Image 1 (cartoon, rainbow, N blue to C red):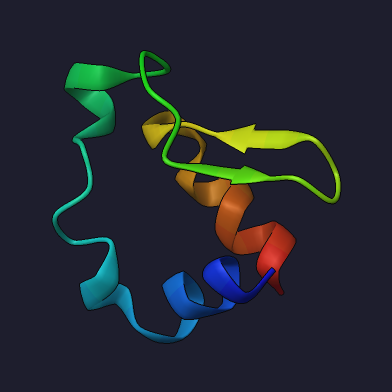
Image 2: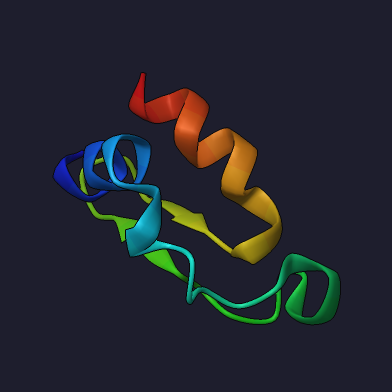
Length: 52
């Protein structure tokens, strides 16, 4: 949750993240161990929504 909040409030933290158009779901950017959810580059909208 803290990582998701950081992404939501400080976009510069994910500016260097993998481009979703290139990497899609080939790598995990964040894994939330409390929910078991893993977010890949293409999941960035869901990550920000879940953080809200």
